[in-house]
Image (tube, rainbow, N blue to C red; front, side):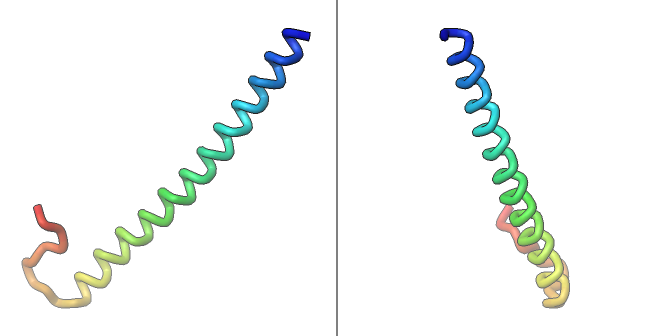
Amino acid sequence: MGPLLLVLLLALILFGAGFALKVLWWVALAVLVVWLLGFVFRAADGAGRRRWYRW
């Protein structure tokens, strides 16, 4: 009974980690798109040498 519970617990942990990593990939992709859009819109603005970040 103990080894069966350990295997089920391990499967549950790995499934949860896989789901969390998949969500994190989608979040990273959304952040990348927003970051690239910031470059595109700031370059189209004709701001010259102004930077779009504070530092």
